[in-house]
Image (cartoon, rainbow, N blue to C red; front, top):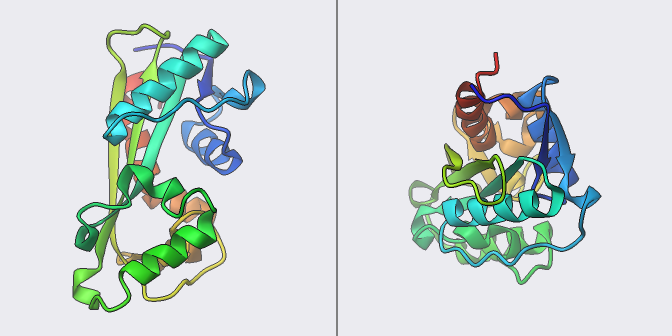
Length: 198
């Protein structure tokens, strides 16, 4: 069991911080890397795992605290796993609405049966910047891409992601429901087990 009271999250995304803190519980305080630096490291990895480790090491180096990084995105079967690690900057960094519009355009004439997709989350935790044994936990959330946006909650591709077990989009779920079902929730269950958190 590893005992942390504080972790720095290698993200400036307030939505992600709130979501992960809710999943982690109150025994560990999650602090944003934004408290220490406004600079984002260049994500030069070719996989979610590589980028998560890179971001965690950078956050630990800057903050001097153990660091948790989340690298996540959407992998669409028809597009060979794209946008994948480029999910957040799929439409050249123009934001969620542009990313969603580009994805809908890419799948414009694709039938429902071929619109399978999964949200992917890799969590990487390092005790310090040079940690030779990062803790890696992966979560997958399977669904498909809708032909049009639906729902008012969440962020990113949530309005386009159909959740079969709930018969609605990810953006139709309440934050509490999403925190129980999502790729991030699945990875966090594994991380909590590794950290010995009840």
